[in-house]
Image (cartoon, rainbow, N blue to C red; front, side, top):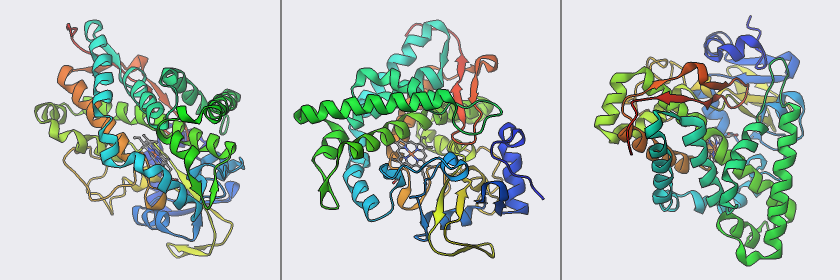
Length: 395
Ligand code: HEM
């Protein structure tokens, strides 16, 4: 019998050992103390993410589903159809491949500047000094939030996800960061209302649109903007550093990518498959639904263990092997179904550019493990700091 506790040390120290046991011994695993069921096999998670019998309206985060934190019905990621469909149609034009491709020059210039500044020093923190500035800058640009706040945004979003060993869920520091972020965005929205002609990006469309026949109110705007700023800036630095770390551990594959940058996208997708940052999101059951012979009743909570599914041997050969040429037809690194990550094309573009620029200038590097810092949490895991060292050079 597995005692699965996503806040427990055994899990936080090495989630994949726990995931492997869940997948094999208890793939539809009910945890009494949280009243929630955890799915760990690929096919179950894939089907669940497509089911209309499950709802996001009761919340999707670990704290909402397991600890009773209130849901956020004004965040697009916590809306069900038809409102979700209407909000996605306002937001999605900004994330189509053609729209994000227009950001390529700006992202490349930013990545190059960061890398060139590091060349004479012989070290670069690829999470905090490369991934975070790129994703925060792009988040601000796409949303229409002031670009000069990008660095403060990164700090606030990191604080928003702050955890303390032995404490379940958000800390006081996280709550303060959340309050500060909402206040900040509240001022931003008030400024846009005063001068709507100055709105750009998604903010301009949110102000002008009608959803289900009505304009959005200030609260709708604040929650949509906070949702986007957090989603766009949090996971990317962790995912980028994860790819750099995997390529450090697999020098042959790294050299192959250096020799053929066409392999970069596959390398990034493989690293988010094997080290999926989002440990789980979940739903509330609307109508009875069956998984693995067990029927979940309405009102029950069900959580999708994305990283466990992404290493399911029923879906992937030798799933614990990092293989940049794997190119699987499907993974769950960005979710699936109607809530599939909206920012996926943007994250893939940012990753491609950052890795191309990094490997072109710094093909050989080594991590500095003593200075690396890992977000050891039940929610979005990955490197907060991942410094690498390399031979100094002039840009
Ligand atoms: C490597 C980076 C990223 C990863 C690993 C990631 C992962 C995910 C996952 C797993 C979901 C599904 C949530 C669920 O099913 O409940 C999701 C949803 C979402 N992501 Fe991302 N994400 C990344 C980057 C981004 C970026 C750059 C944006 C830009 C705005 C973004 C915006 C969103 C939004 C808005 C949703 C909710 C979509 C909806 O509910 O319709 N993400 N992401």
